[in-house]
Image 1 (spheres, rainbow, N blue to C red):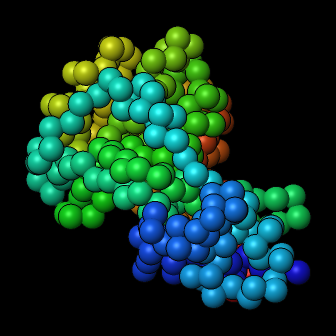
Image 2: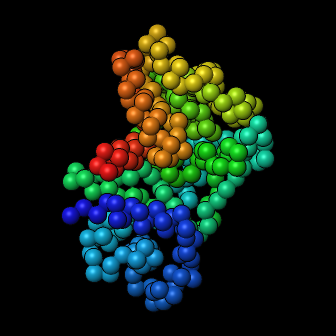
Image 3: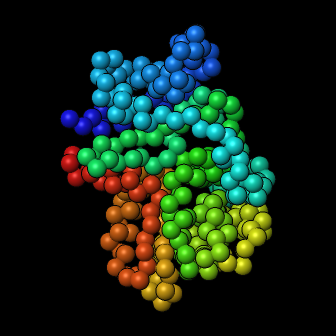
Length: 287
């Protein structure tokens, strides 16, 4: 029997309320002799914090153990965007602001979109570092809107690898997708649709000038759904849609955009964290 809901709710509660509960000291206390592999130990502590039944091997082996992964800072410090783009902390435009944030050593966080097995099992993917990890972030009215951190980097890999030719992206953020697409030789151009002028101002003032291929980038201030009718005139090969913070605000936008894909029949649509959106849609339909 699948236990998607039980596991998801428990892990979400853990991430929301006690993501920093595991520390180096807690790890040492739990296994003073160092007998267990670190990821297994970390997963066992997470299972305990989530109050999962110790006898339920299915939850531990098929969900929690598969969920947990120790990440390497080197894998992200070599990311082209993080290497090439510099951010002025505190730069403000309207309600938007650049800051740097960080993950503490052993702090738990979402590291990628969920995995969905062929049998329907949904695996939330959680990561941690064993040292401090800093990352750039843009806030809107004090709320994180976009950050170039593992979850965004990993969840955008497939869309970035997929696009070529003329590309359009809905949603600007920190321009991570736009930058990574722009450095691909097989990408001809990237059109960005963004309705918030403050977001555009921050990007064009501080980030876009650092792009090596900024001549590939065109920014249009318009509502995403207002631009859909014009897409067929432009012959975009790919569209990447990233207009939401998470599935709670993203699902209705995703459903509406899927309905409007037919207005641009020659364009292949790609969606940020689509597995999570599909999961949320299934929950909604089966409620």
